Structure formats: structure tokens, C-alpha cells
Amino acid sequence: MRDSALVVLATDSGRWLPRALDECLRQSFTPLSVIVVDGGSSDETLQHATKVGAHVRRANLPYFSFRVITGASRLAGLRMAMRMVTGECVVLFDPVQNRIEPHWVGSANVALSTCAPDAILSTPPGLVAFRPRLWPEIEDGVVEGTVGSVLAAAPRTYEFRLGEVVGSYGLR
Image (cartoon, rainbow, N blue to C red; front, side, top):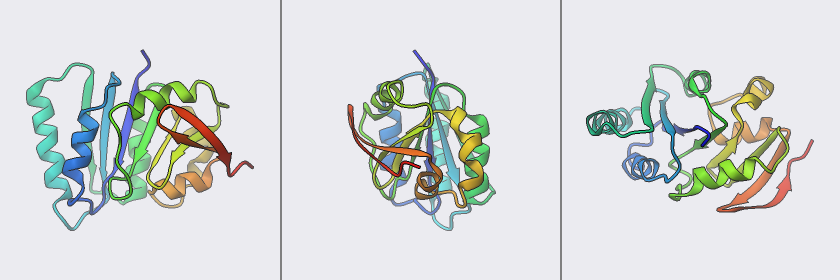
């Protein structure tokens, strides 16, 4: 099975982060790498992420890795996270804007295999999935570390609901 990465864009998301990280840990698709990007939060985001990271290390969960990026802007953190990503699918997740269902990463991974190589799948407003090899093509167009900025840089965007691609928009 192909590796996937789930990048959580969590700046000032302390209120939503415990639920969001629980949703990440419940993903049915493995192997999975979760990378939390905290771009200088002024709330308890970093404490929540650190606590979950310690739990993951203690539990020694197979096929699961957890990292936290802090001390950089949200955009710089996203760029660092993308350099860490391996595998065939990366999911960007904004816990303030959206939730992630237990099978979303697996379904997105399968759906990407049916789309054009430069496609980005989107479940508005805060979830996108794409192949990591697309990042170098869109990185310069990503002007802030947000899901919306990634979508704006995308050559093709498909609306994705759990299990199916339902339409396209933003084709260039």
C-alpha cells in the first residue's frame, strides 16, 4: 500500500486541535505520517500537538509517524513539511475549517490514482489531497501556508466527496 502524509495546518488551532488529532489517529489508511505545522501560535496549539506526539511515541503505533514543526511562519512550516513528505499522497488539513472522516485519506489516495497527475482534490473549505511530486510545480504560487493558497496555485482542482470525484473547477 502506498504511503500517505497528513499535514495539519494548525496555527492558533488549540480549540480544534484535540479533535482534529484524534481524527488523524483514527484514519484507516496506513502507513500514515502526520505532520503538525504550528506557525507561531499564541494559544495552546503546540502543547496539544506535543502531548499527542508523546502519546504516539509511547503507544509505538505501527505504520504511523508523528512530527511537529514549530518556530517558523505557517508558509515556511508548510514548505518544511512538504520536504519531509514521502509516498504517493499528501493531504493538507485545516482543523478550524473542516473535519476529516476516518476513511478520507484512503479514499483520496485511491481517487488520485484516477485523476490527472497535476490534479488536486478538494473538500471545501479545509481539505485538499495531491501527489507530493506536484509540490515543486505549485510551490512558488503558494503565497501563504493555507489550504486556500494551495488551491489557488493548483493547475486542476476537483471537488471530492468521500469516495468520489464529483466535479472539477479551477482548470487552467
